[in-house]
Length: 173
Image (cartoon, rainbow, N blue to C red):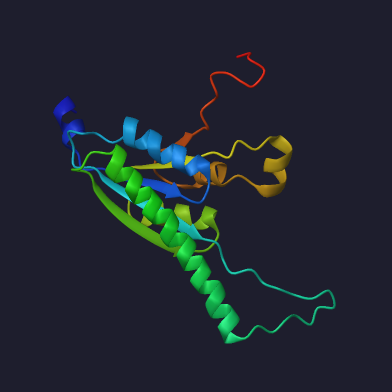
């Protein structure tokens, strides 16, 4: 394959975003290092809204929530999704190439499943996501979204680790 074929290929680059600093770092790194200024890349920003929590009482009878409370919970979830996406789009405008097309997808569900399903559905060329950098014990209990996606999506996965500080408070590197 000629070098020109690689440069001119239209790529779909899926970036998973959430409220965390890790996804902000991943998006920033992607804009600086993955997006090609000579191609017609499409950057797809994906936010996975967590499923609504199920509230139960200790005796197993469960709580009954009014439709007003459920509507308020849904509105809050939608507001968070909107804020995360607006922040990501602003980063794209400020740090990215104005020629890069930006699309947005907001889905509800477990982020591990949502990210994998969307990556397959849109035929992403690469999935970019941040890593929370949990230790072995925490990762064993909480699971790792990035590890799950790396094992289950069909496209390459680029996991951007949190940048290390060049110096710490103690003055040592």
